[in-house]
Amino acid sequence: MPTIVPITDLRNTTGISELCHSQPEPVFITKNGYGDLVIMSIATYEKQLALLEVYQKLEEAEEQANDGVPNIEGKVVFNRLRLKYGQKTV
Image (cartoon, rainbow, N blue to C red; front, side, top):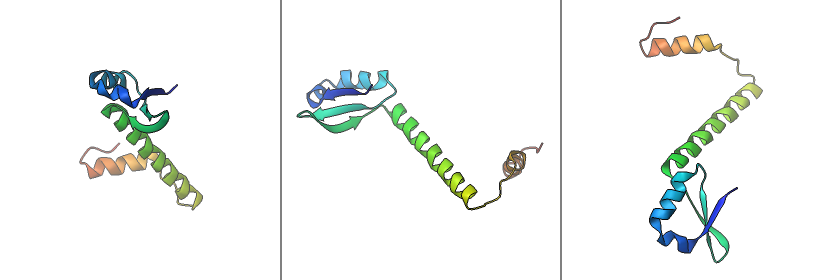
């Protein structure tokens, strides 16, 4: 369930900071009873960005599969990466 607090609670910066760090979700701020802002810890923000990147890559892979781009075996991909970065291939 989302955490919703009124904008006046932002005066207590320490309390808001602790609230944001105590949960892995954004905190919704209301003004005059309506949604106004969303705040979150940096850790939560970075997690959201990472998830967004994963979803974008999955969408790209799905589009490639639908367009008939051939798949490459995982072993081949990892061997290419190992060669590129100077590690021994398997």
